[in-house]
Image 1 (cartoon, one colour):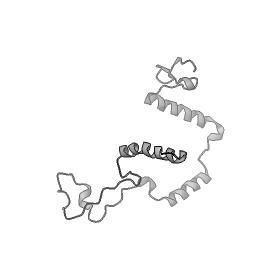
Image 2 (spheres, helix red, strand yellow; image 1 turned 30 degrees about the vertical axis):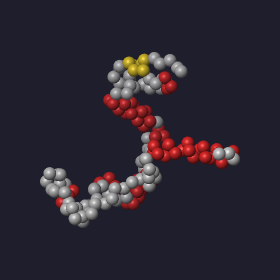
Image 3 (spheres, one colour; image 1 turned 120 degrees about the vertical axis):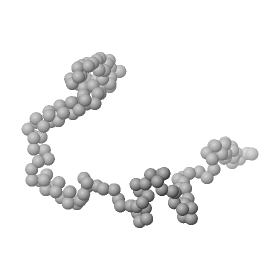
Image 4 (tube, helix red, strand yellow; image 1 turned 180 degrees about the horizontal axis):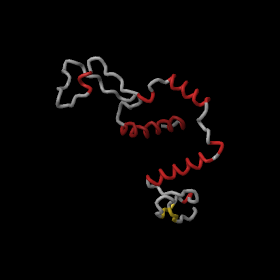
Length: 143
């Protein structure tokens, strides 16, 4: 592996050691403020290029965004779904404020995964050697 040497962060000036696999690239340390400064610097560099100045601008981009917004109304202002009928008073209630639902209502059965084994896993592990011995005996033709 390569040698790691410490270099000064361009934002805070503190020395940091970059990952040895990619040590020549990082110029900023991993502090949140320095990451933000790194992103600002990268964006400024990208926007300074002439071919990127009009990126996502112009009538084509405006038409594309308007079409997407028309196809997805209210996307940026999503609200929670309305409560199911009869559940309005249970939504914002604290546990102490309301008693539990009446016992006359049946409780749904607990769901189990469709691939859950019916027997404990230890029982399955203990039975495998017996099956393996029987398979070997069947192949070799001896008991």
